[in-house]
Structures are given as C-alpha cells and as structure tokens.
Length: 287
Image 1 (cartoon, rainbow, N blue to C red):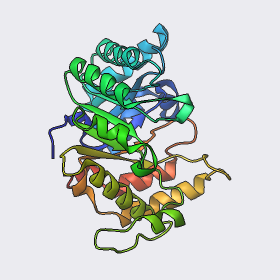
Image 2 (tube, helix red, strand yellow):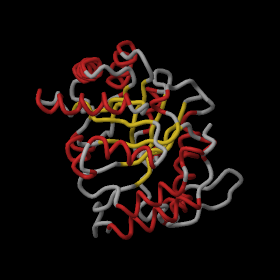
Image 3 (tube, rainbow, N blue to C red):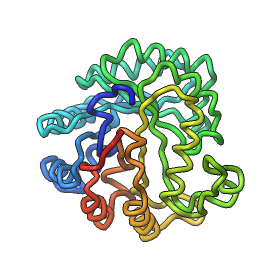
C-alpha cells in the first residue's frame, strides 16, 4: 500500500457537525471517551461547507480538534467541494485546513449531488492545487459503486491523490441490477442484499478502476438511517450493521475503516456503538 498518514489509517469516523456531535455525548471529553471505547485512532472533522464557517463556529471546531489531538486521535479535515469554481474550491480547502492547524485533507466530491458539477479539467486543476497546498495526505471521498458515477473523474485524480474513500452505504445493496451486471473475478456471482457482498463489490470495482496503480483505500460504512423511499429505518440500519461486522473480513484490502457518522441527527445509535465496540476494529490487520 501507499504511505498515507495516521489520519487515514485503522479505525475512525466522520464528524459532520461538531456541536451536534458533542451534544449527543454530553461533553467533548465524553465524546472522545466514546471514540476511545470504539478503538478509534482517527477522526475526519468537517472544516468547511461551500464556504468557510462563521468565526464562532470555527472556534468550537478548533477547540474540538485540539482536544482530539491531545487524546492522540489523528485528525483530517474534510469539506464539500462543489466544482463550479475548482480554483476557488482548492483555495478554500487549503486555507481552512491551515487555519485549523491540520495537514491531512479529504475532499468530498460527488458529481451531481446538491448541484455539484465537475469536469475532467476541473478535477485535475483542483487536485493539483490542493496537493501543492497540503503538507500531509490528500484523499477524495466519493461514491461507492464507481462504475455508475462518472469513473473518468476519479481516473483523472488517480495520479495526484494518496487515498480514495468510497462511501459504501449498504442499505439493501447489492440489488438485482448490480448482481446481474457485475461478477467476481472468475465469474462467481455476488449475493443480493448482503452488506459484506456490497463492500466486496465496490472494492472490486475500485480495484479495476485503479488498474494496478497502488492507492490507499479507506471504506466508510453506514452508521446512519433515514434515506431512501421509503426511508431506511433505524432498526434496519442497525440490523445491516450487525450483518456486516461479523460477515466481512477484507480488512487487508484497505488501510482504514470509518463511519458516517459519529453523532447528531440520525446517526450512530447506542446499539450501533455497542456493535462497533464489540467488533474490535482497532485491532484488525489493515493493509
């Protein structure tokens, strides 16, 4: 595997909204204690949206980042990247990363979501500028089954980034269309509606996309509910997590496993945390 930093390795989580996450656990100290109980060694904290956060919100994010660092939890900053002005997106990412005293960055690039629009030249421009401005490791978080989401965009980033982070939210996948279209190496079929099978499928397709180029992969798993039609229920999300954790053993294929996301709104229920804690993900043998 390539040489991504500690902030991308082993077990961790996304932190979406710092105040809401802290409110879920009560205090910053209790939030970090819960991370430690889950054997988490990294956290990806959101440091910008389409623009920078207001000053008062930045203060709370900075204080949380400092507390994580003091607890020996490595921190990467992440933010949404819209693509309407790739140069401005890159400048924002680098500026905010430095303002929070961080060296590792994850760009959230999801073409077509919330009006985001990316072209090949914009991906190259953005990634080149961010790579030049980031002193640590640089990754992209994006879609899971990459064949269905403009794979050429990620191919354009392949030679520039250190890591890709497919957001493998398993819901009821693989569905019938997926298992009909894709087969394992050697021709074996993927099993429908099985969380471990969906992770295998997505990783297999990312491996094909990279075509022998060695890039680190971090998988983000589903620790939330509420999306879909009808909405995916909390119990369904908990059941699927309990299906994945004992059923998947491919940790040697990835450098890290993390979760969307650690707290606030419809995410990381008590049952989910208990299941994750019992799985001992900090002790898995990652690639």
